[in-house]
Length: 138
Image (cartoon, rainbow, N blue to C red):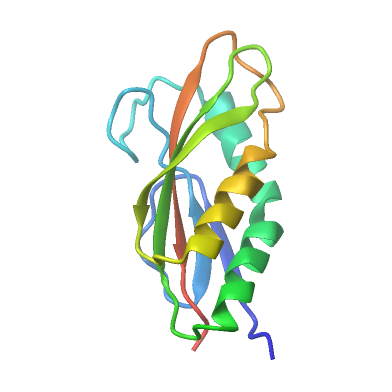
């Protein structure tokens, strides 16, 4: 049986919210994740958040599949990637933190994010750090 998963989306680094999948944009451009004044315009940050929002359901599916074999699976995955200049395609996706330590979820998340691209590509390369929190509903 698949347990329901509540999702929350936010535009900045947010604290742990148990029972939810939290997509939180900790956007960076050479600065620490979640830091104000990242060098990205508000439109670019909103575009990144909107693209990640479109991946919400596939990311939930990744997690739900893993919960079938490990019902206590929870933690955070932090991705770093770039939006390519001109195309906005998300590429060079790297997992920089993986508290779940589940290869299936890790691969699925990287694959899903790799399908995304900015709606309004920038002229230059955009570096992004994006934390995603996973926790089963109690």
